[in-house]
Amino acid sequence: MSDSRGRLVYGIHAVKTVLDRRPEAVDKAWLQENAAGDRLAGIAAALEAQGMQLERVSRSALDLKTGNGRHQGVVIEVRAAQEFTVRELEALVVDRGRSLRLLALDRVEDPRNLGACLRTADASAVDAVIVPRTRASGLTAAARKAATGAAETVPVYRAPNLARTLAWLKDAGVWIVGADGSAQRSLYEYEWRTPLAVVVGGEGQGLRRLTRESCDELVAIPMHGAVSSLNVSVACGVLLYELLRQCPA
Image (tube, rainbow, N blue to C red; front, side, top):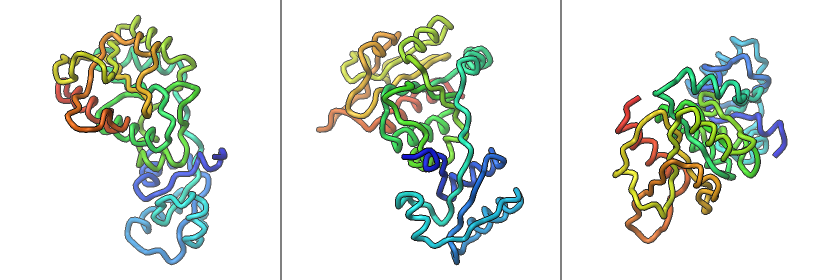
């Protein structure tokens, strides 16, 4: 997917979140011609208030632009949110102190899964998401759409080496808990505490060996049916909400 496609945000909720959080980042906007509805009208008014020239186009043009994504009649192009630098990550660890909550994703390559994980992270009070620099999805248009605005609210740090980043966090006093189906302890038996980083493996692969060895604890999600694992975004939801239950934000 090209750079310009990666900067597209579409869908009413995702676009509204950008306008609420970073209206100055919008470079272009397209609305479906003859489309009606109060929410679209509100978005059009907000864009025009920013001095944005709206381009009215056909639904088929928006379908083409988004790769047949569910655009709901509105597409914008934004300047990509800056990824966290290592200094910003360090500052976050210091500023949040004992309240810190991080999510680390090991090789999540499907952009829709990344977006769904960001959405879950936003909902469960996670401060930032850490992903590897290689063999992991970037914030493509599909990821932003799946995130429904969370790509604009949850900082992402792309680690040159995930295992080393986890080791640094451990040295900084952050507890590292990994999700692993072979772990002896259930996540419901574990006593969660912050500051903490929850580490979840990618689609069908789980945690890499070095990532697993970087964890202080491993916990399993109980599986009582025929399937052996959950989708990564579902697994994140189970883990992060158990953390939130035991350690309210």
